[in-house]
Length: 128
Image (tube, rainbow, N blue to C red; front, side, top):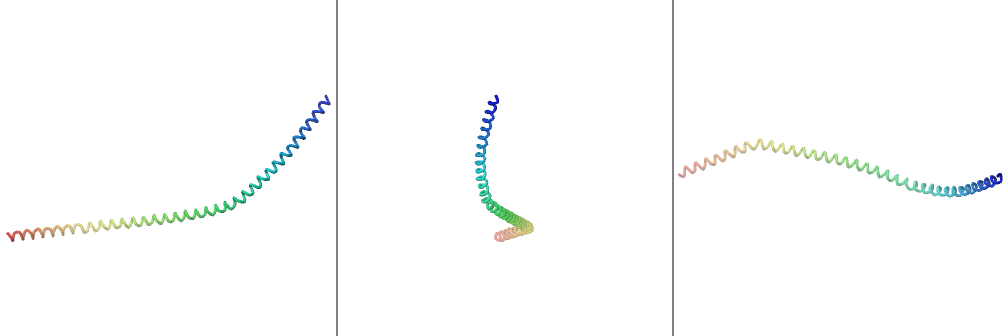
């Protein structure tokens, strides 16, 4: 029985040795894959940094443009409000002028019409 245990220990140690050798090979491959991944990440980082810098510059420019647009919109709004106020003032002025002039003009037109009617009547009586 001791012989059988000895053989089993040898087989187990041989199997363990084979697994260790295989794991050394696998770890070597994993190391090379990790080196490739590291190089890829370095390249990606090197290429991404200028892109991020450009993105930052572009973002700043977009911010400035949007602020300028907001200022222009505010300016246009104030201009439109000024034009509206001017239009309202013109309408109010027109109403005031119409209120002050309309009644005297209508009275004058009525008076002139009455004078003309009276003159026609007078002329008609003279001819008759």
